[in-house]
Length: 211
Ligand code: 5GP
Image (cartoon, rainbow, N blue to C red; front, side):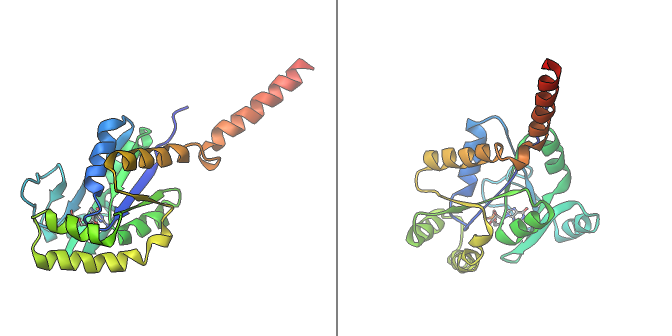
């Protein structure tokens, strides 16, 4: 019996280190697939089409929305971001745990459509550290940094909708914590109904057979 993958949604303030965390998780453990989103924002220096994102025009994005090609999509700081449907459904069927690194509006839409999804929120150790990380990236203008900090205030209001928080102070510890939460979720009774039912039937056969 192949276990079905878990849809793990990872959100967190811009600058909390989600991207590095996802890369580390993929590097260290074999059972993850990272969904690559589509966006209308321009690539940052060093980003590649098809690796960090599929970078597309607003027209192409809207066309895919029309075709129901996204599990969810949202507008974040003036740009569209969306999770392409096909890849996610295929990987879940293959038993992979699929990571969606998406912002909070998208996460809530995923939860509505897939109530069994696991919602994880990555926090920086402090607000001051968040600002340092955003400024230290050197890729964002002061205006963008300030937009993202304001957005963090909004996003902080929605954390109660998530299942777990992890604090990204030490990357290795945080990676292990995320992995162990996802792994534990596989052991929940709800995710093992088939195994439990088989056990019941086998027990019945065994006891009746022995009489
Ligand atoms: P960034 O521009 O920094 O790469 O991403 C901005 C925000 O958009 C981040 O919070 C990121 O998690 C989120 N994001 C990336 N892809 C998606 C997506 O497919 N859907 C949604 N709803 N948010 C996304």
